[in-house]
Image (cartoon, rainbow, N blue to C red; front, side):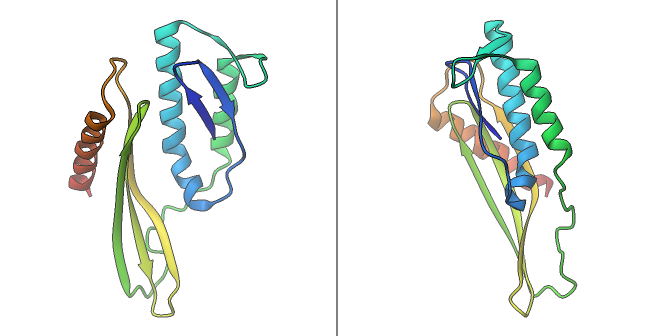
Length: 153
């Protein structure tokens, strides 16, 4: 995964992903980061950026590296992995920042033996507009996105 600060045009690679739930949400996160990167590129026409060590890197190469990492992720599409489920709960969350906003719905299933599995049912994300909008207004945008997501489920 990586961090992107659109104000400074710096793209920082970070550590590898190990948790399955984080891996399954990585594809949504990566698409948001690619959208953010393309927004930065289109608004500033920068094709080379400096990493945290000051070295110039080609943006296309960084995006290709992320895409190769995505090909190695295995995501289980089975929401209810147990044959005898006793409790099923839907948990949802939405949030916003200055760069993007999004919503996610998780399904928690529990067996009589207290085995628990949590799987992502659906998620949606959007890049914040180029025009500066306050974070509370972006939170409202996230709430609307969340409502639309829940109506589809």
